[in-house]
Length: 78
Image 1 (spheres, rainbow, N blue to C red):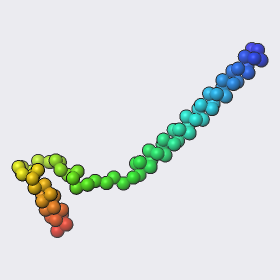
Image 2 (image 1 turned 90 degrees about the vertical axis):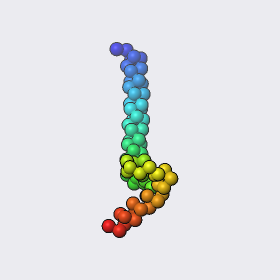
Image 3 (image 1 turned 45 degrees about the vertical axis):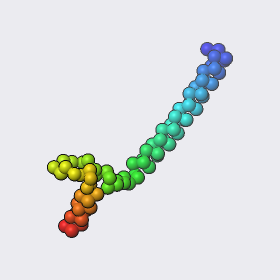
Image 4 (image 1 turned 30 degrees about the horizontal axis):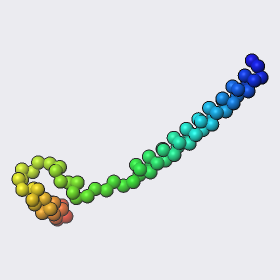
């Protein structure tokens, strides 16, 4: 192998090494970001309860606030 070819191969290997380091840094950054997202507490609003079941009631769309309030009150009284 000529010196010129060896130098070219070495340069290409250096480029690959640099790219691999960049990829590794990006993977670590994304992993940290994902872990932070997973650690965030999930928050739910009362409106997320709407439509979660079959109660047999037919006026839920009109009185859902009242029904949710009653459910919360009943849970609190227990």
